[in-house]
Image (cartoon, rainbow, N blue to C red; front, top):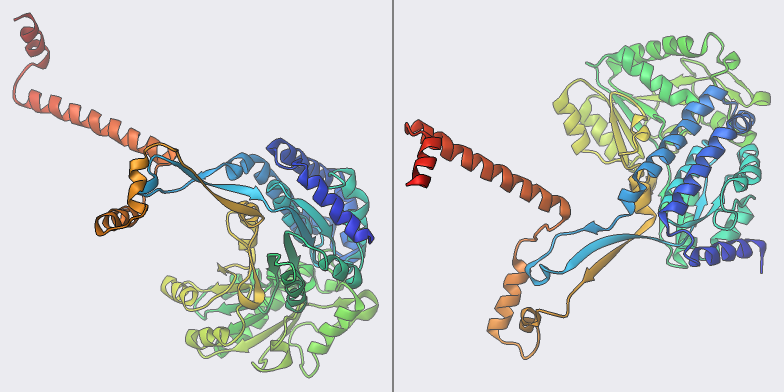
Length: 509
């Protein structure tokens, strides 16, 4: 038996003891994870600095703060999320108990990504723990320093059997995918996502695929272009453009293209200074292979902003390219680097057609001040998520599901959506052995009268008998009764009668 088989077997056996079912255990593990982030903040920041050249403040803003928010939310809401969820009833089961019970799936494999090695690896783990699962954590080997810190330090805080960290490269990941899991959660490219899904299909294992794609950014000519470019520049060039939901390209009309370029130029000067290479807030490409890939995408173009590079430091300056042909190589694959092409369109109709002719993106960004136009663009396009007049901020809301559609992924997570994604929603109906007369209509021998009764019962409107609805109904009834009494008193007074005297006079007589 291989080492990977032993790790998975140990996690499954530990899960089968029922250890993860009590909410107290899950909360304890979540608190330990929170303590890990708090106590090892410096180790995490140093590892990310060595992997991606990201500053300590950048790591806190884009990695650990998000994680802390997710963990605190899960701790606060776990009892509510894990509680049975009453559902509506029909006449046949009106007196019975019916609900949905979230249950753990089992052993979940988490395959992390290198661009945000902590956030996109440990955020799914929060959902795994909250839902009561065991989790095998496989950080990306590309962000090697982060993977090493995770392997060495995380087991000091979490249950070693239930949440082991497995490191290694492609071959180790392939070996893991040969084993049976109850769910696989993968973050990365569409190419690898297909391989993950193919491997999972052999065991009929469900998957969550958080992929990427080319996220378009449309700028309307009548919006505040300066502010739009400021927000786009921030989202595009943080982490050196290595963000799955970064604006991949800009769509705008030719009449504003020059102004867009100039506003981005001014914003870059404000954000990173005259030489971004010297800015502590500007990162680096993860490795030379990706550096060469991004540089090859620029071949044949003359940048209007940036374009400088240094292979020894894996540095590529924030770069803007204008008048990019729609069918160029630059527009065929996800850039995942600090290159921002501008494609001109004639109007919003042209932009909508351009977006719809391509694969469904992970995110869509619209900068526009016309509410009707905004609504129209949302209704006539499809994407994993959409943000209007900003970029990437929908990712920060735990109340919104984060995930792709089509080639940009499947499944969702963040907050309660993580819990639901990694839980089995078990349908529960608890009936009584009494009141058998109600059931006679469904038993043979069947006749027209019995069939009519069953049909009426099944076609009747569903009735909400949940506790919340019951409390609401009782409250409304009490208020209505009070209003009725008040109305009677008002009518009596209006009739010129002294209610109190009238009452006592009747009593004594």
